[in-house]
Amino acid sequence: MVRGLSTSWKQPVGHFFTGTSVKVELLCDMLHCVLKKLESIGLNVVAVVCDQQVSHRSLYSMLGVTVEQPWFLSNNGNRIYALFDMPHIMKILRNNLMNYDIIVDGNAASFSYLQQLYDYEKQSTLCMCPKLTDDPFDLKPFKKMRVAIQFLSHSVAAAMQAYVLFRKLPASASYTASFVDRIGCLFDILNSQTAKIDHKFKKPLSANSETQFSFLSESAKWIAKWKFAHVRVAHAMGDATVCMWQCFTHVSSRLSIMLTR
Image (cartoon, rainbow, N blue to C red; front, side):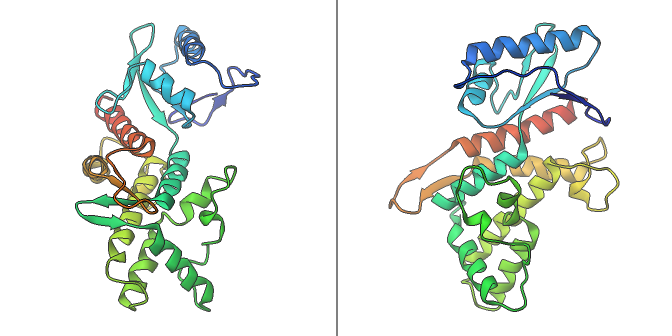
């Protein structure tokens, strides 16, 4: 599928039936073939977007995509930026948060506080998060992307801070609220859909988006500090997961696209 960056059009360019995952070498050939055909008719291809299948991650690695260099060159020598789609990143982040506490500078973002918040909400007659349902807490593989976004949002973060003030949640839950709020802002920036909106983080990036650029730059440094502590295995720590690499690459790509255009 090909679509415009700032114009409302899209066009399917090919589909393939396969019984198993496609070999990364074949994917690479197919991608360069499509890019060559698009460039031959005068289209300026800026970026490629995919989900987080293993073969797609392997493709980006084969193309030399890294956090420091989130792009590759087409056969014509044009720079093509590599992106993962943000809704899938949010789902993978949700899944990681259910299995790991995310530690940043000694503070822990914990799924247990989100579960406690929802348990209180289900018992309350006056809900602060009326859109929150059981779905975000269900790890079934084919749940829609929006269910992962439901609890990684500003409204959930605000409700959690309120429960901390009401002493329903411990003070240590405040960092989880801050974590959720920051992720929600990142999603708004990286998933903007319309220019006619007052919310500054939901507007598309432009040369005048100084606040958004500053937030993305600081967030890239913040993500680099993430460490993962398994909630069921004591002292099991990791410096990075697929989720962290995808978040980092996506932020770096968006920054690089805007700073070079």
